[in-house]
Length: 347
Image (cartoon, rainbow, N blue to C red; front, top):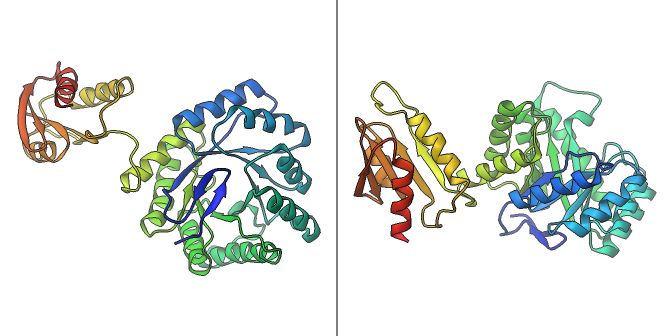
């Protein structure tokens, strides 16, 4: 188990839930849009938000976000250590430093001194893309990443600073897993998990689910950030799904539905799509965590009976189950209305 580190008031590590971090994608110069994106991420479920802090002129954006957001703000720093000091002065709750491009010991000591004074945590984040020399061996690459982070940690520990989180990300799932496994055997600092540069949406979802999911299933990782070439809010949705389907947290009703085959005699795809859209408009009670929509009599009754509520269809007719018992019947055109009515009747 990792130690506990704070990002502002957010506790990360220990017995705390695995946290979700979001990343702003709007340029800092577009301040009103940036704030809207930040508030949108917060509303979607981000528990901390990171912003790329590239130049001194963007300090105004940091201060504005701090006033508007309720969740902690983290400044992502590369190349220019003076920006870390400016971010701390602007009141951010955490900073990320890259040990591959911020390396001067004297400067690091001053950053650590001020972070310690302000009780601000630091994430040491290394990405595979920062290495000039690459190797085909996951093990060798993972060891190089961990070595770089370990040397950096020693500088911090020499100044009695331990409010540290660490991330070791590669675009290869196997390298990401190997590096985080190796680090977790040596240190107890909270690990921020993610697969970097994961690609377009489908590829990114699969890579992130595998890399983050495998590590979390082994008890490794305290906070996650899904990286997609796409909208920042989609990253939060995927992160929530990963945590929920691993049984680590619960965020939304889960729809269990079959892939359909020649035995299915209703348009189950339409029913499921319509039900998903309806779920965005209504809030189901917490007792209804799983809703099954099944298309035939082979597995349908069993899945529907095992869910909190479910429908198993035959030919143009469906039996509604509530935890193992048939409580009514429906047809394809009225499924959504009938299921939601049965849920409300049960509350």
